Amino acid sequence: MSAPFAYAESDGVGTITMQKPPANGLSLDSMRVLSDALDTVRDEAVPVVVVESDLDGMFSAGGDLSWYEEATPGELDAFAELLHENLRRMETMGTLFLAAIDGHALAGGFELALGCDFRFVSRGDWRIGLTETDIGAIPGGGGTQRLPREVGRSRALKMIVDAEQLSPEEALEAGLVQELYDPDELEAAVHEYARELADGPTLAYAAAKEAVTRGAEMHIDDGLAFERARESELGESDDFEEGVTAFAEGREPEFEGR
Image 1 (tube, rainbow, N blue to C red):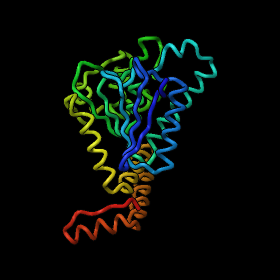
Image 2 (tube, rainbow, N blue to C red; image 1 turned 90 degrees about the vertical axis):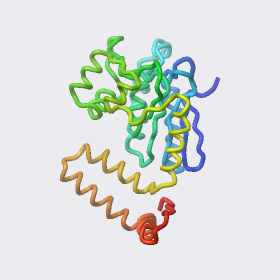
Image 3 (cartoon, rainbow, N blue to C red; image 1 turned 30 degrees about the vertical axis):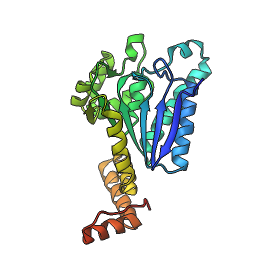
């Protein structure tokens, strides 16, 4: 039996692939495998990671209900804790995480996508949303916190209460995803963008992500001070020197991530 997630890396781009038929259900085992993949991303300082699915028409339907029925209370608690930990790591690491969604992303599957920095989707007859209230629960993987930060409190609450499922086009209009592609273009487009990012000023990308993420959790004065501190640190980097020099010389910069 294959692992629920597979991790690979090439040319500075990591790929986390969900591969657990029939719906990439999330369980304690899958969260442990994801945690190991994130350890590798951290240890190898991978600048960009694509999160995608190997299943046709399915990103992830969320929690594996068959596993839920057999899990002990301790296992359920461990799953919830590790799910929160993994998504928070993705949110706060210097790595940029790109979700390539070409199928249903529901409940915990959508929460996984919300833990990514950017979400790219394909056109198709599939849906995206937090559907936990349909079974008498609420989003337990950070959805009640991250969705309002994306679309606002009232819009997010209505989506959660109604267990609303959006089409790819509706998700784009709501600002939940950043780009919409034809199905046969999505994978290549996302990986091409990931490679472009990996060849770019990755130190600046990491600093920008940190400033935006942490700044949103601070008073604006503290956020501005944090921004200035990160900008000052970047000013001492080789990449900044290379960027300024390349601009003066009228050539493309060659960043090295240091």
